[in-house]
Image 1 (cartoon, rainbow, N blue to C red):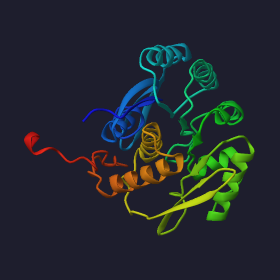
Image 2: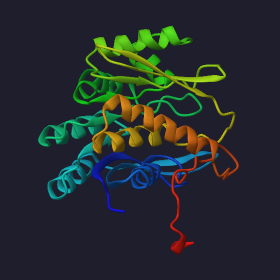
Image 3: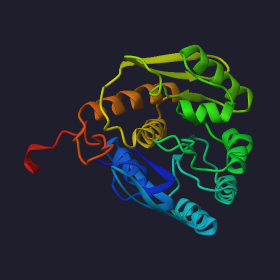
Length: 270
């Protein structure tokens, strides 16, 4: 099997392998894309939490993006954790030098415990500048609440927040519904012309580390291979749900999902 496309992933590293760049590379690879990376932070963590964060300088992040893309042009870009306004501005400058139209933004702003990971100035630049540059933004409910300054406790609230983000300049929005207390998982995809709801049974497990990273990279991968954005969201959601349902149950805290869930190993390699 040869890669069907090439994607560049701009995100932080997760030493436990469940989220960040590590999850992104696994996802892109199993779904058929060639993964390149620009690392924004190095974290020391395991399934019980983050122990330390070492930021990469904005200049080095820009060099990773530009030098990599100059040699191997990506078909799509996925953006994850950007830890400061200087980093966001550096990424924006680099994106402006590239002619890549398919860009997926996972606005990583809130830790699993609820703490904000970036400051208000960074959020402002992300909302006013970066969000308008990308094809799709994929906030979870806490992130959508921060971006829209609204409270979300229902599907109607999710749709209202999505419309608010469109009004702020987003082209397409996928709001992830995992934080709603419901037996059904509902994710909302919308733009100026349509609203779609993807429904799935919610899987009762604590092992969901890296689902946001995985989902946005899966969308970028399918999108880079020629699927429509809406179809890419649908297929990525199905992949993540299957990966949650077949999780390996590693670690003492919030364990990883099973990124290999769709791989069938050829008999000669068994």
